[in-house]
Image 1 (spheres, rainbow, N blue to C red):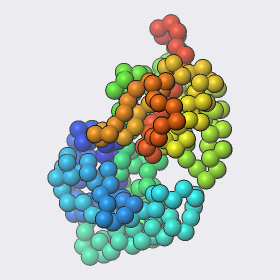
Image 2 (cartoon, rainbow, N blue to C red; image 1 turned 45 degrees about the horizontal axis):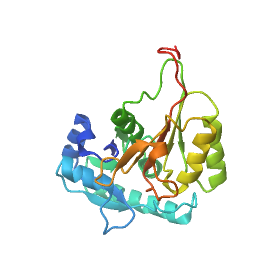
Image 3 (tube, rainbow, N blue to C red; image 1 turned 180 degrees about the horizontal axis):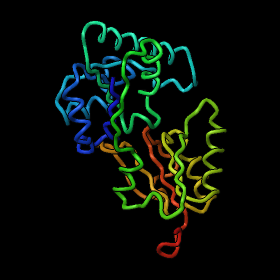
Image 4 (spheres, rainbow, N blue to C red; image 1 turned 30 degrees about the horizontal axis):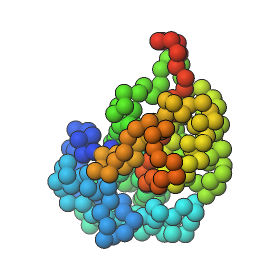
Length: 245
């Protein structure tokens, strides 16, 4: 079973290896929050590769942490995948947004499958992440010289703790990237402003979709809604060229 990163939304960002693995797979799955609803990953695969995609339900909208809904969905998805191998499938691919090893649903599916049937080989194909796409679009280096690069999610059962982690990262050196911050955007903007990084911070929402928005953080209307798939990049103050070396 191979987890295939398909990028943040633009079909042109699929790698050649990702396209080959998806074409060669006996079955290609993509996660969804409802079986009658195509996901972004499914749309990317259909447009870029043109293969049939089967949907696997995951409780992606559940924000309660390790809930019964989440674990039940992982177990059921693993059962479906393992039934395919039992019936003769040799190559099963799972398309996931971004990279399969970065905040991906695939990690939970892979662990469940491996626990139930250790003989199933699990592999991954890396994908372009949202922070890479956004940084490329605005020509913003994510890291220079000895700068650290910190990636954090703005969602968690304990939202206060998640936001505190963002504030702590912003008070340190290096670039801070925040994923999934749409529902907490006003609080994130406040944290970036207090850290003195608002003038250089950028925001991207729904990357690769017709509804995407990319621009300086300061130009996003205060109090306006932002989608779940929101990426914030707040670089550190940079003075002289090569100053971080």
